[in-house]
Image (cartoon, rainbow, N blue to C red; front, top):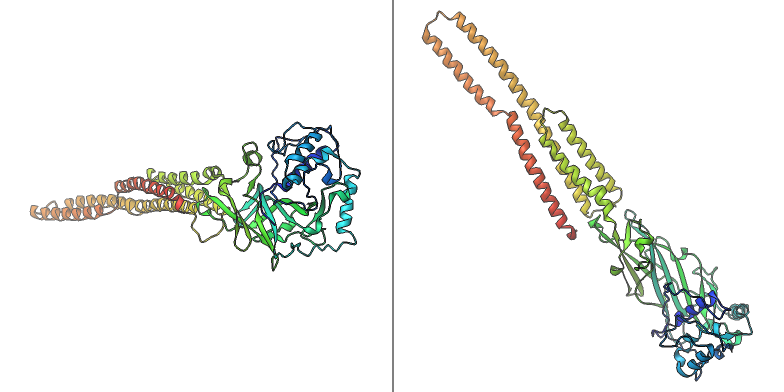
Length: 519
């Protein structure tokens, strides 16, 4: 198939639009503000309709309605001037339009400017009977390979409409796509003049041989969770030159190896949809008709307006489609996550509650709620981590959100551990030491008083020796008591922890956010 850029089927479908709206009226109602996107078919010259000049109704066997004013919004004004009668259009086409583009122009005008003796229904029924009747040898299992060629050209256009679902844990993405395919089947050609002027008709088309009337390319999604065969059935439109246009729309679900998940929740997920032939020995050459088409993502009808309450939104400028080796069509879609929800529900609360645990350093150990407060805040952070784990896959890869939650947990655990240490030092070391010091002081006073009463008659030198011995014992006990923790020393420990913990945690956050792109 010669892949030159002429809008052959676009003209056909434009004619279908005009005819289906008002086929019997001289004034055709159109929708100029509606954006219609049609695939581009290769240029094709009808040998059986080739003439020395372009005749508006003669090539289809009709009679010209001379005084009718047709409308043809899909024909450029530089090709055909506006506000002409059918007679004027016929004269202009006869002397101006070359035969190579005559068919593309005439099919948009012949319903408005031509009269036929046979109705469209009778014409199409006759075409069906002739092509696929009992006397036909047409087979839906045989590719319509052109003469002396080993491959059949089939053109593919993929249109994106909406995101249905992304399941990061299951590794799947479901999109609502339009799959439009065009090819030529020489067995489906007919001469419109012999059947009453109809230049197109519809046939049932499906991958299932029990449900189709015509052959269709074996084209499917390779990394599929659901097959293209699961799409709703759609008719194929066939022109009199054998060009087939088959368009299907529906949800397509693919298995994805998501790229970019490491930066969750500031990630842009990348998922590829791989399309190719499912035949063991493919004889179909697939060609791309332009880039990905994103319908409903323009300024006039943005996806944010149509599906504004979704977690993800497609990024058209980063999405692409390419024809890979092995006749593989790879459509890569990039989706941006709505990060505001996760910032409000996970990131900010985790940081806030971690900083809140550092408030335990400001509480006196004699306040019994100090340890309980730290443990309660730690449990909140753990609950945040559990909530995050439910929306993320279990993977060996390091995720940014995991580093944040785990690092915050470790800082909170250290803060609670410091409170436990302070409790131990206070209730095991400080209070018993203060109690023993009080008892020792009272006992020593009693002994001194008894010793004074019993030995008041002894000599003065002996009393001085006993007094010196008591002073030596007190100095040794004082040195031992000074070795143990005191309330003041515990307060100093809390003070330095209150300075160091927030400082190191702030440094941790700075490093984490600055290295976000490296994940």
